[in-house]
Amino acid sequence: MLSFTYLDNIALIEDDKSITYKELQNLVKEFEKNLVDTKSIIAIYMDTTINSIVAYLASMQKNYAILMLDQTSQQNVKLCELYDVDYVFNKELIKRDAKVKKIYKDLALLLPTSGSTGSPKFVRLSKENILHNTKSILSYLPITQTDTTITSLPLFYSYGLSVLNTHLASGATVVLTSAPLLSKEFWELFKKHHITNFNGVPYHYEMLMKLRFLKKEYKSLCFLTQAGGKLSKDIILEFTNYALENKKEFFVMYGQTEASARISYIDTKRLLKKPNSIGKAISGVKLFLQDDELIVKAKNVMLGYATNLDDLAKGDENKGILHTQDLGYKDEDGDFYITARASRFVKVVGNRINLDDIEKNLLQNSFKCVVVARDDFILVLTLNDDVSEIKQHLVKNYKLHHSLVGVKQIDEWVVKSNSKIDYKEMQQRYL
Image (cartoon, rainbow, N blue to C red; front, side, top):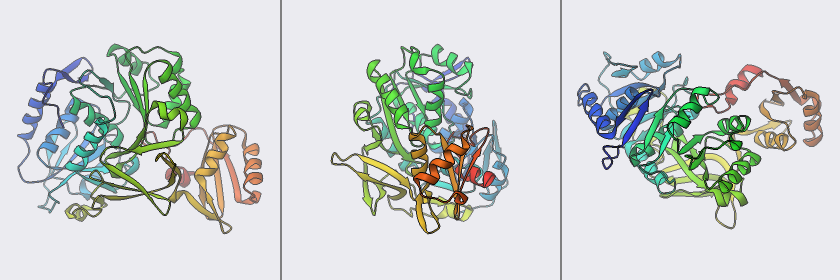
């Protein structure tokens, strides 16, 4: 995971402290001395600090099973008990009085699914899964030893962790901060450390538009990446044109935590022609369609899921095959497109309706909305006050009776800790 070529390079910067790769390597070795040789489970309350990263790297080196937790979650104590962890790292290492347990020899990492850190459901990944995906990402992203990135994403989230892994594997520098994107502190660090690449989910790019990012000059910035959900076509084109005009690069990527986490990408020039595409599979990944569902065949596909301690003894249940539950198609050039999420289809009075399609349709008509549903009722949530206009649009365009559609104005979106829209929570809260 660590680069052994550029030991004198700065690996991590936290506040006024910076450490080289050699110093990081030594810290990892020191941490390992506190861990028994028997394969164990360690829960890491992962934050954007040097100490957390040392704990993560040392546990990987020790071939432990790492339960990756959001340090702000109220469910962490329960999760540690559910999985009967042997160690807990929360700013300091604590050894628990845990039972002897069976853990699959290749299990290395347990990541929360889709940012749902309060849920006991985790993705089981091997070290091979992570290393293979890291190598594949580095075959197309131009990360070198001269790069510096900043933690715009949480490290317990697969996308944020992959950013960390790829930079550490390249001898690059990672600036650690928990400062939010909209804060003055974040942008002061961005300028101070001459950040060369920015990584974000759709929410981040929507915020960048509000910050008038495209009107500002960041000479050090070389490329931007986006994953974690579908970004609107208009914003994709805005950033694509910005990249082309300023001799930078913009990569839109598709992935899932279940694939450790990147699956495909599309670069700047192709984005200009195909802003709705997720592009082609990354190196070492085969992507194909089966009954319109995108299927992944690769070494970075997870071992399986875990919902309790017994699941940690399970081996490789997927054998390198992942059913993404995303529906789509492939064009004549071999580029893939996602049209819907299988789980986002509902039946209303016997008619099959795609909730993602409704969201896209509303967005094309200048209504930014989140759509949730239960049996025979669709609820549209909006931050604006054009409630009656939205309802009229849906009734007319989808031939729905007005009693089957509701529109509610809310104060703010409910988002997960990885900044993705939390559909499940919004459905529970408002339906």
